[in-house]
Amino acid sequence: MIRHIVMWKMAPAEDKEEKAIAIKENLEALIDKIDVIENIEVGLNFNDTESASDVVLVSTFKTVEDLNEYQNHPAHKAVGATYVRPHVAERRVCDYEF
Image 1 (cartoon, rainbow, N blue to C red):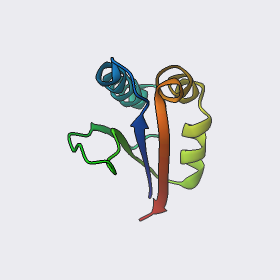
Image 2 (tube, one colour):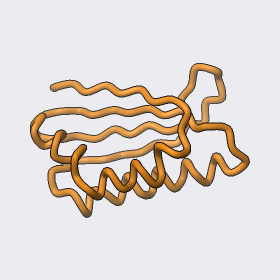
Image 3 (tube, helix red, strand yellow):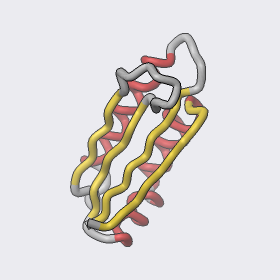
Image 4 (spheres, rainbow, N blue to C red):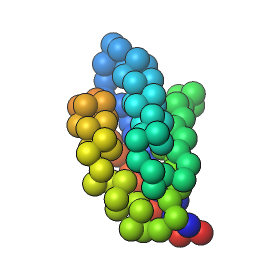
């Protein structure tokens, strides 16, 4: 099994919280659109320290090939282009096998 974790720090904006909620809702909706996703969870941070990220994605796949299929799927790319990349300042990722 493969775990895919991504953490984002939102770019400064008056509607930062609304944009984070949109990221969460649209990423979680991918489970109904991309059949290789075993599990997907998106959390919104409440820790206000400088080192904290604002949004975290934790998803699970059976294989690395499934993760690659997810990452290249048009629905995933659309969420990234519309809801994620325009509104984040920083991204961290960790993929591991368990």
